[in-house]
Structures are given as C-alpha cells and as structure tokens.
Length: 181
Length: 181
DNA sequence: ATTGTCATGTAAGAAGTTACATGATTGC
DNA sequence: GCAATCATGTAACTTCTTACATGACAAT
Image (tube, rainbow over all chains, first blue to last red; front, top):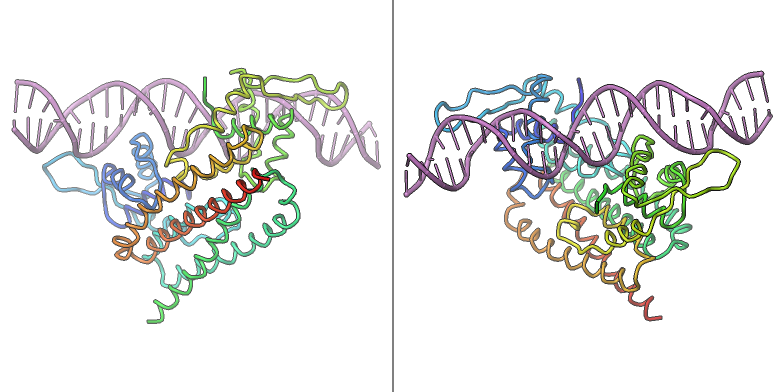
C-alpha cells in the first residue's frame, strides 16, 4: 500500500503541519487560494478513512467537551509515505501533465531535507526545457499550417510552459541565495 | 440531456470535423500534442455509446469490405449541442480552473459564427484580468508571510495567469487583424 | 424550546483506469 | 498457415460529485 489519490496526499500533508479534523481540512480548501480541491464531505471523509485504513493517519485525543471533533495525525508510516511522495524522482509527465500536483508537492516540501527544494526545482527546470525543445520543433514546422483556433490553443500551451520555465529559473536562484545566507 | 464529460465534447468536436471510428479518435489522442486525453478504449468506447444513446452522434455507413470499422457522425442535435457548448458564456471558474477545457473549445471554435473567436478571447482576457487583480492583493499582503515552498507555488500560479493574460491580449489583436483583411 | 450552525457521515451514480477478451484482417 | 496488428469491446475497481441524513451543541 504505497499510493493514494492526490487528495489523499494533500490531506496527509496538511495533517503533517498540524493535527486537524475533516471539517478543518474542508475549511482550508475553501479559504486557501493555492490548491483547488473540492471541499465536499463526500470526498474528504472517505479519503480520511482510506488513509486511516492503511495506517497513514490515526485519530488523536482532542480536547474533551465542546463539539464532537475527530482530529487526525500522521503515523510514522504516514510521514514516510509523505516523504517518499514529496521526494519521488520527477518524470517528464509530472511536468507536462501534472503541474498542480508538482506545486502541491513543492508547497509541502519545506519541512523535508535541506537542499530538497533546490534539487526539485532544478529537476523541474530541466524537464521543462527538454519538453520546450520538443514543442519548438512543432511550433516552427507544423503549427503554422493549423487553423487559427488550434494554433492559438497550442501557443497558449507553449507560453504557459515558457512562463513556468522562467519561474523555475528564478526560483532556483532565490532558494540558492537563501540557503547560502 | 444537455451535458456530457469533457471527453464527450472532445469526441463530438472531432467527429464534427470528419466522421471517424473510435480507433481513429484514439490515434488522434496519442499523436496530437494539444489535448491530453487518454487513449484508453475503456474511456472512449463507453463515451461514444453515451453520445449515441442521447442521439448526439449516429453511425455512418462506411466503405464496405476491409476491416470492421464503426464510423460515427454528429446528428443535427449533436451539432447544436456542440455549438451551445462552444459558445456558452464564460465564467470566472472556467478561466481559473478549466483552462484546458477552454483551449479545447477555442480549438473547435473556428467553424462557428464569425466573430465568435474574438468575443471568446476578449471574455477570456477580461476574466483573467479580474482574477489577477484578486491575486495581486494576496501576493502583496499575505504571500510574503508564507514559507518558501507555498510562496513559490503561489507565485508559479500567478505567473501562469499573467502569461495567459498576455497571450490573450496578443491573440485578440491577431484575430482582429485577420478579420479586417 | 426552538432554531441555526457545526461536524460527520452515507447512498447513488458518473466517469475514468487498468487489464483482459475477442475476432477479423493483413503481410509474409 | 501463422504471427502481428487492427478494432471493438467488457469487467472490476477507484475516486469524485451531488444530495441527503443525522445528531449535537450554541444562541436567544
């Protein structure tokens, strides 16, 4: 049992920051601009049960009295699974089709081994440059023959990847500078 | 019956360009860089059956002999449904969370009423600017207090929306110029 | 006491994934 | 004849969505 949905890892990462209830997690999803997860109880409570079933999280004794709240906390196994997921080697596919997931991993990565963020960002930039080289070929030779609609849609994609590559470059420099201090 | 999954509309749009078989559509998905749809038969054939069941597409008599192939073609009802989907009014949510779907709509929009593409792109830019205004507020006041990871992840998002806004601006100008000729 | 909101949950169904199954046809 | 591949399909499973259900606490 070494896998879960993205939602599962998002919950695991948030619980790693602080033990919380399902209701707390839902509130985080509605009030936070960074990730676009659903706040539906039909997704969150079953996901929490999945995590609990495979012993990645466990209930914590909360404050007695007041409203009923079930607080959860990652287990040792869960922390290891989170670290594995965060530090997993990057693939081209992660960068091309899974940008949101990558940014989720980046957001949770601060607490991991020093240097992990730098290595992660360097890998992101490397894969992006590689993919952009492929795209430039298509852009030069085949894209001009397309109708306006598809052509614009394709260019939007290319511009997106370019922007991400620039962002990655600056991010690497910034994190390197910070660590040196 | 006025809805379907994104995959359903992608198939409908491709069938509108030319009657094809499920196998043809799968090949389009693997060989085309613009949309990242799955080529799995377990997704495509059931989706085609859904479309056929609600009378949006119908089988066409293909060339006799040769391999067995079931060609499909949109019905009048299906063409109308496609047009409705393509020309549907834009929401903030379409732009913020559904970029890929928007670009799919743009790619299929060439065949629709003249001016549709311009109006579409103008709406995209308008919604993007509005959302960016919201983001700038967060970026100035709350983002600096975040840890590096979340901060970078957030900035990546902002950079993405900025790039899309620039792209939309240029796209509007280009399409306007073309139409004037 | 009653009403609202907090907090957790479940049921039914949609859609996609992986993996397997099945013929038919083509190329050699 | 036989292997490869073309082409369609199905089965089991996972996850998420929408909508409803339930009860406990809080405020008045």
